[in-house]
Every structure is written in structure tokens, then in C-alpha cells.
Length: 221
Image 1 (tube, rainbow, N blue to C red):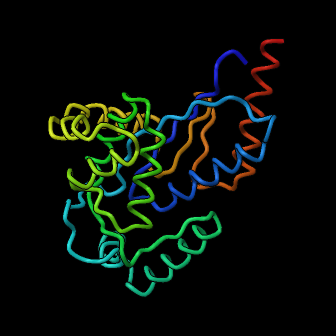
Image 2: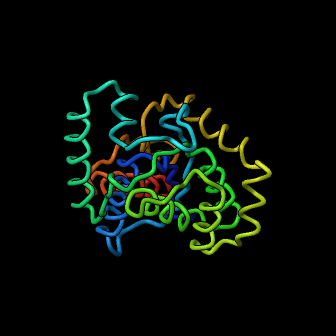
């Protein structure tokens, strides 16, 4: 293949299935070994709960119980299930430490990181900070520190966030999701034509990539 297979991923930093889906996707690619096609991954913005305040007062259980209208007991069971699935993917979720927040600024930072060629590194850093370290990914100071962890210039990251110059790019991503009919994340668009919804098993991603690579080879032949 002359050009990499493009993988466009709509996700939200506050989405537990998005981090799990990221690991499943990575495992699916790794399992192909030497047969894995060359890929190019780009993350796109999606807000699961755009009405969330930056400084939400309460626990993740409090938020979900109110947002989903579910009893706290049911939410607790749901989070325990997600924690178990995450553990199977090698992720140590800590919902007790998690600080629920609005993720708009985190998405702006991801667009800045893309412009600097370090989006994948930042996406990983933000997910880990949010789900396993209890960091506050809605505050500029915290985001700047995480950007530096991901190899980005702290001053440039702060300027990008405070100026809001990537806000339009975030809204364009959200609008594109709407145009595609995406109403939940993660959502993977593979080679611009195949959609994979949710944190599917690694094998599913491997199969789709193999299929796309085969179609490309057939077209060339």
C-alpha cells in the first residue's frame, strides 16, 4: 500500500469505554504482527456530557446517577463492571479518585498536540491522568502540566488553551460526528468507509484492518 490506512477515532477523555477501546484497538494491531498494515491514527473531539461544569461537586456515582437518572446502587454496579473490563485490558481504573469535569479544554489541547505531531502521546497521557491518577483535566494549569509530560512545550500549550484558537476545530469535530450519525463513543472510522462502534474486541479491529488492506491490495492488482 502506498499510503497508510487512516483511522479516525471520535472519543471523549471522560469516556471509560474510549480508553478501553484504545487498548483493544492497539492489541488488535499488535496481534497482526508483521502482517499489520501501516496506519495513521487521528483523534477527534466528542463531548459525552457538554453540560458538565468544570468543577463538578460530587463523585462519579453522583454525576452518573443524576445524568442517567439511575439509582446510585445501579451506577456502582455499572462502574464495578467497567473497572473489571478495564483491568482485563491492562488498565487500573480508580473511579473513587476520578474528578469529573468538562472536557472541552482537553479536546482543544488534543488539537494543539495534533498540530505539533504529538496527539497520540497526549491522548494516552490524558486518559491515564483522568481514569487512573485522579487528575483534573478541566483546568488549564493541570492540562499544561500533562502536555509537558507528553513532550509538548508548556508555554505554547498554555497559549493555545488561553487563546481558545483550537475551539473551532473542536466544534468542527463534534459537528462532523453529528453528520456521521455518531451519538456514542468510541467510534472508529477506518479508511473513511468502515465504522466500528464501541470498545470492540481486539480481534474485530484486526479483522477490519486485514479486510481493508486486502481490498486495497486487490484494487492495486
